[in-house]
Image (cartoon, rainbow, N blue to C red; front, side, top):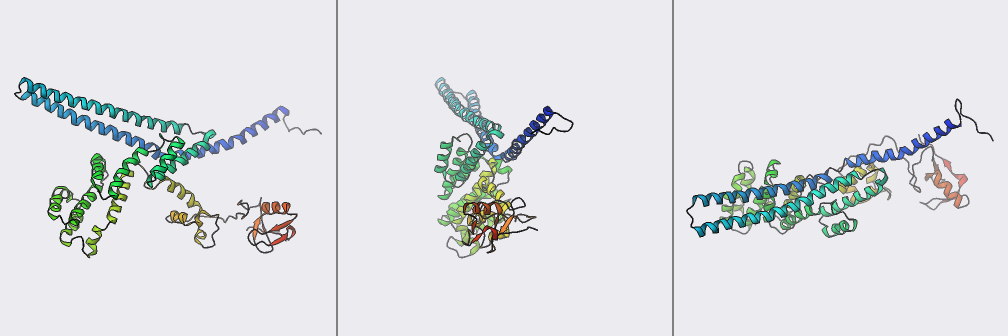
Amino acid sequence: MEMESLPNGNSAAAAAAVAAAAAAAAAVAPSSKLNQLAESLKLEHQFLRVPFEHFKKSIRANHRIVEKEMSAVISGVADAANADFSRDEAVHHLNSLVSRLQGLKRKLEEGSRTEHLQAQKCRARLDHLESADADNLSDWNNMRLKRILVDYMLRMSYYDTAMKLVESSNLQDLVDVEVFHEAKRVIDALQNKEVAPALAWCAENKSRLKKSKSKFEFQLRLQEFIELVRAENNLRAITYARKYLAPWGSTHMKELQRVMATLAFKSNTECATYKVLFEPKQWDYLVDQFKQEFCRLYGMTLEPLLNIYLQAGLSALKTPYCYQDDCTKEDPLSQDSFRKLALPLPYSKQHHSKLVCYITKELMDTENPPMVLPNGYVYSTKALEEMARKNNGQITCPRTGFVCNSSALVKAYIS
């Protein structure tokens, strides 16, 4: 048999054309993968922001230590110069200054090591993002899934489980365990009705909290005042209010007036306006507020990343049918947990209905048209042909058990 030659060409040109077509076809998949990768990298803001904010926090803390210690040493030298010390007193004073400087040196060395480790973590994350390409996209996505799961477990306080996943997958530089442990100390204290660690955290981050107009410290002070009133230690409560609550009066006068009234109403009051201030759920409110402030400070999303990614997928699946009793079990939104997650999402805008085969879960279209059984159930042509081939032309409805011959099938037309 002779091969037909291409018009206006020869066999070499034909081979070149075939090679070009093959190369173009092969390029489609990598191109789509690169587009997918580019979209994925846009979502990695938190991945870089959190360690960078932690790094900056360490630098600021070390800077404050240097300023405080150097100011004290310079002041001590000035005092020594102006004072009329004896020789022994002068030596003792200078020795104390030298000891203070040696202590500062040790703190700076420790701070420098911490900064170095945090800088390494930032570098490791940049390298991880740069390593993503079309060839290792599957492995990279698998690693990202593990990072998202660790983030979720740390936010939900499953610290031991999170650490096991981190260690087994070698994710130490790609997750923020230390940052969440910092939050855990404050959360545990608040759950035990202690505000001291939370107030210390507010003092460490005072300038940034002030810049964001946070009133978390004010809420902590109010709660501490309420606890003094609950213990019927009114004199101490009044002293505490003068020292710690009065400075907030210019911006939060109404809340202050309401809390101060508890001195008259007491903790056993039945007045709803003041009774709620003594309820245990106030501590839960403080925990939630701390989590929000903490996430905002480090540039984290308020919701776990896992919830955000799931909601992105559920937004494409959510339809009114998903909330009906006869929703198919294959639909994720048939489960209560997913329904709750999708509750705030809008319904998906579907321009055209899509028919999916119950058996193969493939789309039924002109290439794979739907076929109707005598009992009224509809399945795809591919699924029924496969079933007929395995059962000598017999078709069994997987839902009802109805049996018929393949010749009894009727093609359905989608309009």
